[in-house]
Image (cartoon, rainbow, N blue to C red):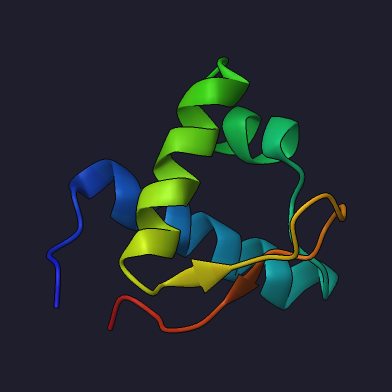
Length: 73
């Protein structure tokens, strides 16, 4: 299993919290605002790494299909 960076862990935990409150995942912009990242490409890069490591997945080209596969704990 790959060890997450502190930023990846923060993003994953933020997604988990958002989904638990809203029952759907955040958009890239919402996620960026919540973790203090203005660049959508940086969010995209973090999510791609989380996907490569098996923590999240989504349907390409479909909005709000981000889902958590496994949690940090």
